Image (cartoon, rainbow over all chains, first blue to last red; front, side):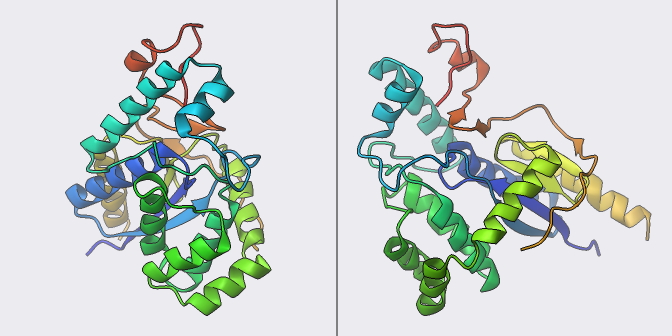
Length: 217
Length: 44
């Protein structure tokens, strides 16, 4: 039997392609029928974002990119349609822009509690589908509980910033790999897949690594 | 906190997919053409 293939995924909570890429990767892994061990790593795309941006995503785009508001809406509609194609229900009208450092700290706290994958799913869903705030401790503890985390342990970790060093280490590792954008998937520490690729790209990569593992037995 | 592992020669698989760099999240090329009036790739 093939050993589980290690998948390291760099992503940001506020990255629309990261949640879409998560779904595409999951579908690829299902097709490949290769056991995988997934670990999420932190990548903060926009560290200058305030805790709460008082405006819609379309307004943010329009202001920061100098786009007419109608174009911003059209772009968001396109992303929403792509998300829908993989079963996600993005609602950019309710997304709360926020700095994602604390959310990354939560994902590390979740890893320490053995619930990182469940927590990643809960946080992505909260941000893109449910219009919930993912940048404040109270909200993150609530999300953590939904993912099965211990509320007291999680709150203590967030309040003390216990894992901020791990977040920075992830970012440093991304730089060492030459990662400039997310999502980015490192498969078995040897292969890189950049972006939200079609499921078959992931499936092929997993089959290839599994075959290589078999050939050296 | 662990030190970054040495830079590894990752073999890239597949063409570049949809990804975010900074606060730019590129749209598919054919669709970005419909929203970019500057010649630059449209981005979120």
